[in-house]
Structure formats: C-alpha cells, structure tokens
Image (cartoon, rainbow, N blue to C red; front, side, top):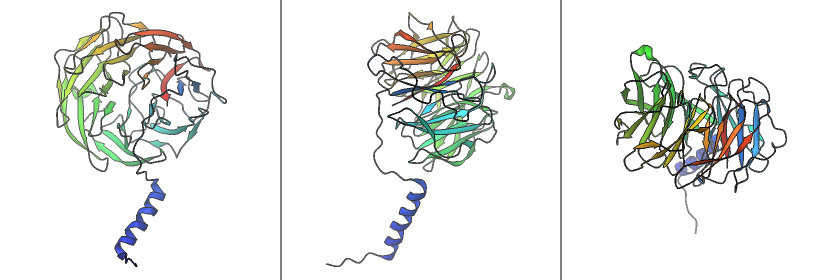
Length: 383
C-alpha cells in the first residue's frame, strides 16, 4: 500500500531535523544521577591553573588524589561559584573579572573538564561581589532550572540574563530582561519563576524581585518584596528543593536569614521575623540538602551553619551543634544527602568535607583536602 505524505509534513520534518542538528535537540527524558563521582574545587587565586578535580569515595565521601592533569587552566580569573546541570556532568562557572559564564563537560570516567562552546558574557561585564576582593565572594549569581532547560544570571545591573541550555550543554542567549532592580545580585529559580535580590541600597530599599518564566525562557517581572532591617548586602538566596519556601541571607554583624513562602503567582510573603545568628559575620552561600529538610551556610568567620527546616511551615532553627568549623567559600551538598563540602579560601585554603546525618542534618568531619594554590573557593559535585 502506498501512503501519500503531504508536502507540508515533509517540510516540517526536514526543518526539524535541520534545527535539531544546529541546536542539538533532545527529546529523551531527563535522568538525574545522584552518586558523587568527582568534586570540582576552584581556587580563588587569580588566573592560571586553578581548577582542581578529585575523585569521590561514594561510601565515605573522602576525596582521592587529584585526577590526571589537575589543576587545569580553564581561562578563569575570578571564579565565583560552580553550578552543576541536573544531568550531572555539565558545569557552569561565572567569572567576576569580565562577567563571563564558562561551560564545561566534565568526563564521568576521568574527571577531566572540557570547554564546550565559547563563554558568554553578561550585559554589565561583572557580577555582584559584595566584599573582600576577587576569589572571596561566593555569591549565587547564576541558577539552573530544575529541569535543566534554562540558565539565568544576575547581571549586576537592572537585568537578569536568560539562556537556553542546549542538548550538548552549550548556552544560547535568549535576552536580558529588566527585573525592576537597581542592581541584581543573588539569584535562584524553579521551573516557573526566578527570584533575584536587589543589592543596591542606593535605591532606598533592599528587595527580592520575582520574574515569571515564559514558554520560551524569556522573563516578565511580576513583583517584589521589600526586606526591613537588612544589615548590609543580600548575599545569598536559595529556593527549598522540596517545598514552596525561599531563604535569603545578609551580611553581619549578627547576620540574618529571612524566610518566605511562595504564592501561586511566585509572590513572596515573609514568615515572621528573620532569624538572627549570634555567631558569625555573614551568610555567604546557602545550600539545601536534596530532601529540603536541612540547609547550610558558609560564613566569613570561618564557620558552617546548619539548619533544620520544617517543610510544612517553612520554619527554620539552627542545630545545637552548629556552627561547625568551616570556611567562607561555596557550600555543596551531594544529591544522596550524605556529604557536604565547603571551600575554605580564607583560612586553611582547603576543601573541608563532612558526612551528613540524613535524619538530623548534623555534620561530622571527614577531613580536609589541599588544593594546588591553597585557596579553595568555588565547589561543585559531578555525578
């Protein structure tokens, strides 16, 4: 039997094949690996070979001898943080030196990073780094949506940059969208909304702005919430991965954590007064456990603070044993929920490792690992 296919259908199929060849379309379901394979630890030591990669013992969390070729020179001058794609091996790093975002594919067998595509550069040529100079401000200035379709950047101006993530991990610029902010700083997202802090007190207020994600990844500003009593710099922000809450940390003295519920339209409502930390100098980076029942913050006073989260109410409390000896760099929690790693760029210069009690969130030291330049700062876990 002969079947006649309409010419329009033939053209549609042909154009789809060509388009997918150009942007590497992928229609397969997203698989999110959880077993830690390597820790990427980037030194805040300036340009040069500053990217350290270590194999992870998935049973103990201990880091092994650096992989062959480590440390790598990946063209970074002022690395801020590491963002790992849900697929587990695509890695994105913002550079405060020029506002660039670098994309790598880290081999799941050897741990060797390979640059994919040309680094994109944001609209301001910079990122928010509130204090202490290059290599010492782990602000969460880029965010990936949970499904991995889009990456958004806080551009340190009035805008948020939007990028589609192609099948091969490369980034395509969608546009820069006005957030209504004076200067966008720290950023977080789910698959429907983006939230970004306004870090410019010259505007008269400290605020978190909400932007809705369109079907093509573009953004529309839909509102903001103003924060009162901010000591200085809204340094960190992260959405809870399993509940509709967002947490924001500021700088000290006596740093504070603001808690918000998320409305159906992405709006934020503060949940009572902010939590004041009597010990510490700031909340530099905030990272949740995968079940959302704990989160951890780094601190310029060389601590790691641990908090429990009531995922029903959003209420938080600091663990009795917290704070722990830690560092001022990025915090990374592995997706099994068993291990936590922190960059200690100011004191020991090492990667500090902990095992994590999955029931209580409590941490136990599993040892520190030296980096090539003794300035461990940005931390990510390849899976």
